Length: 407
Image 1 (cartoon, one colour):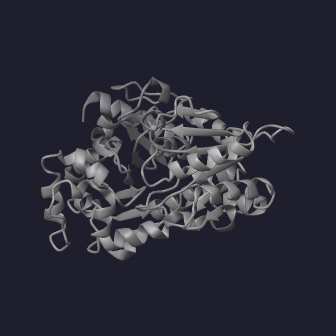
Image 2 (cartoon, one colour):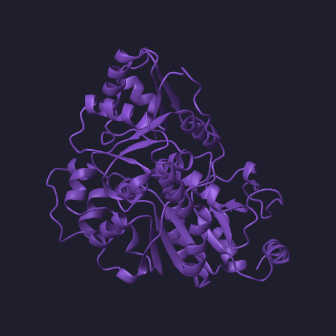
Image 3 (spheres, helix red, strand yellow):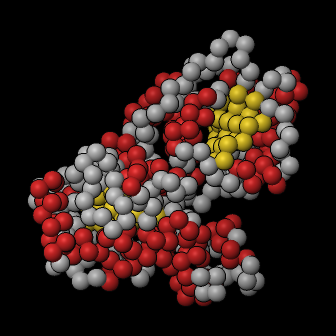
């Protein structure tokens, strides 16, 4: 062991004691992913049980690339390139790899493969924030090898003949080709964590070879809000919000049509669209001069939550879901914001804390539903408070500790 690594191992033992930590490999801000915010807020700097490794670590997190000493006042985060050497120097009790369906998780997936091939790796776990992972598989293997990787891992599944179709999520989900099996079968995992029963069932269908007892259902936590919702002053215009990454399944065109109908009744009505990719969506739809519309592209976590706190009601619709964790809805619930969702996938878990839209929702119907919900702001208050208490982040950490440490 090198002198620097020996010094680092001694310093860790002085600071944390002899107990081995769990390595958490994930995204961190400023990466524009819900997973980055999830990791940053869940694993607190004073928590001795978890140490975060990321390809986004900067001096703002306490470690410049190449440094081994965490600053006392900063989160316990390290460059992902130090994962292997720290395992060799000290040894982890386990390593958990947080994975999402995007190119942002490529570095974490590569680190999982590297650690799995190392001498005496720790127990390895994958925490899937969605079981549909073809958006991670494609950039990981490269566009020229994506189709062959799927065919190799899913030889028994009905496969589209045309080359373009496998990149289309609905057609792949229909054929039960989610990509999780292709990514994870080369690695010996102790367990896989998911955030909903719906995700668990999708994963079991996609990867039936993995022991069912090794797939554990957790939940996406509710974090203590950093923003304080202000009660709207009398006479303030109705403000609607929709948050997250836009895609064809989120029915934003239905929301825009409903918003225009509401403005025809009250020209002061406002709509906030905020998230990664919202600016491109607005440009594509020619919304630059849309009256009453505010578009906020890729805000910081605090600004994003402040925008959520500022609305009277949020609309988070889906026409299809692939097992993803609805990260914005728990926070809207924590902020006490009435929220309209589709009863689909993991969204069904919110029960009375949200308003479920009918499957055949029209723009006119959505406009009426928005008005009905905002006229009874206290209607779901108790259910939202109960959901937030049952799903607060400390409870999730407790479940992780029990799974990883047996306590």
